[in-house]
Image (cartoon, rainbow, N blue to C red):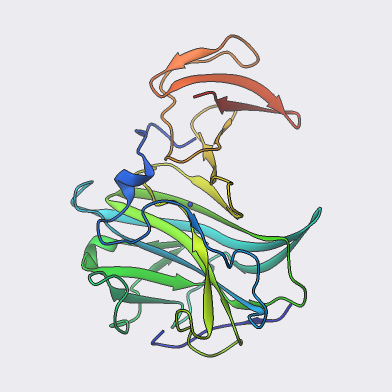
Length: 274
């Protein structure tokens, strides 16, 4: 696989949070309110390059301010039991052209007005969508060429959202490694994840680009001594764990519903039973 950067100016257990449904996070202007996988989830012939992207914006009804923090963003090509890393960014730096502003209404119409204004702090990408609340903050991973058609694409991003920030990830199959993607001309959209918002703690979103498979979320509870990871496999947002629980013990009703402590791969974890 051969990565290539696109520098064309035109062109998803958090700590003490409230559960928010995907539809509550989605901006009114977005035509995709929840996870969507297109007919091109399987790589179409003639489109060997994959262009991952993320987008975020400010949702007024959630808060007056918004903040996005991203630790890493990765894509994998999965064939059978083999998972091959495609694109990856750990955000030790930021390159001009990685992110741009697009019009919010009409949705994504017109050329972006300028490059995204971001910060890099100790390997974390940080930006504040409320600073340009009338724009979509849209950024890319390196475009990568697939030599063989994978069974499906897996996208993973570790992030934290505060205030009115909402985030979605997706990707496009593209004919070549350098030209500007043009919707349904030289590119085919693979789909997009649910919208995610109001995490207040770190989450890892796994967007499995296959029909009939919901987003996977791992929620990190960094304040707990046993450092559990809370996992939900359905639509929706981070889940508040506001009361004590017994690992490997009885089920407990918390503010977000029923959950049970279990052991997975030798580690103490929790599974939401809702």
